[in-house]
Image (cartoon, rainbow, N blue to C red):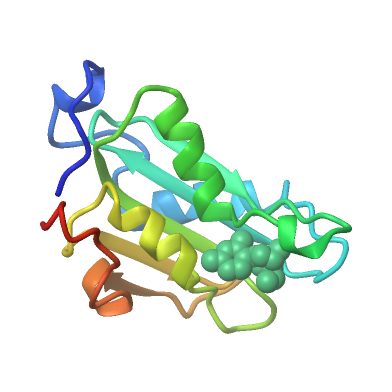
Amino acid sequence: MSPPAIRSSCARRRRPSGAAATPAALLRRARAAARRAYCPYSGYAVGAALLARDGRVFGGCNVENASYGLTICAERNALAAAVAAGCRAFAALAVAGGRGRAPALPCGACLQALAEFCPPDFPIHTAPLRGRGGHTFALRELLPRRFQLPENPA
Ligand code: THU
């Protein structure tokens, strides 16, 4: 089930264009967001850049806490920023982070949160913080079966 529609510019223009529309450009935005990560406990910085259908880009970084379980992931911070700005229609997500050459992948909680708003073929570009080695997945590859309430089937 899609979330209820709201009046916002996101719904008007379906094809994003401009500087952040390419995977490489969106990954640059994710890497920039990762520089603001607050991760003194794990040392694992993550940045996310969520491209809205209207061309806006919402950034997020992970924000850790001394009470470890309160940590918020970069992807959900980006998603929350977008929704709080009135945006619920998205074209792509880029995630950059981790240590070394391995790209950071969104965790299960973030995938479930994305699935609330994004279709199964939603593209997720992943990359390490520095260097090459990224990969693009469809949301359905990383989360084949999202949780759904029985009264709200897709
Ligand atoms: N983290 C994210 O920001 N996104 C994810 O999808 C997985 C993990 C963060 C949380 C924590 O600050 C650090 O990475 C190590 O788990």
